[in-house]
Image 1 (cartoon, one colour):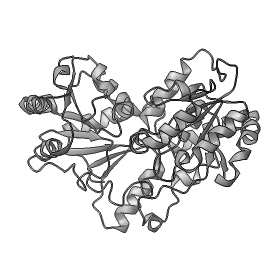
Image 2 (cartoon, one colour):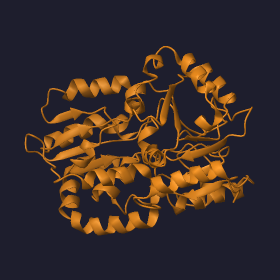
Image 3 (cartoon, rainbow, N blue to C red):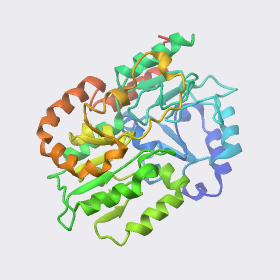
Length: 391
């Protein structure tokens, strides 16, 4: 690829190449941080922009970004690394629109440009609410926010009113990753929920943090499921792999010799999601993806909530991730995880009853199902061509 030689050790060369482009060549810029890779969440947007022959710049801080495999002539890829070079890059940024899934713009190391009126767009990498699992001022400095569903618009407007913030351009968009997964699943000829050993596949896919499912009771849960005769796949969050390497090592050493166990760290693949008879999670957004794409119920282990905004209750709206769990699955207390095999057989024995219920919920809570990429691409082009509205 054109910029591949400068990906790993010469980020300053890519920054120079980026800055040498004419403004029209860098009108639309995507930024991918290192901890949450952007591409899966904006792939639908990029594909729509490609269809319209729009030139795109994709700036990344991740050496493993899947965008490096893209050879489309209208996408220019730049690796800018981390730390001070990245901070300096953003302070001097001259582009028309910057799209990112990284919240807290202006609060930490990623600042708004001091030299150009960049229009900053936030795209969600989760279906959760905006006011509990994000920091209090996570979205305050964006110009436009591409919302997944009506609950996010209600929350953001309530936040603006509570803290007397300037109104942002809130757009009814939807969720590109789910659109992509629905399309991928529909292309499968037949779902197979059995392992090569003819055992039902159970996927454990938790969120990350000190009190997540793996940290709280992961080893015990894995043993319970293996003893009950399931094939168990553990898919830790990338941040858990990075920050809790000791735990991951313990899990691997204890279970890796068991032919019915798999530790899957390839979060860019969705094969495990599609082939899972049951999903067990905590507060991870993968529960929404499994429910809305596979139309199967989710088992939630009730570990403590992830709360990064201590003032979230002031908004007066129950977070979506709290209100939805018992509607798309079943909640099991952490003290009762030994009952999970029994609950699996009960829940998935009544899966057809959940299917129509989940489909109805999906239609009510997510904007523009199957069309989110088009909606977002249209809005990006509109922002470039016109001054974005403030309301």
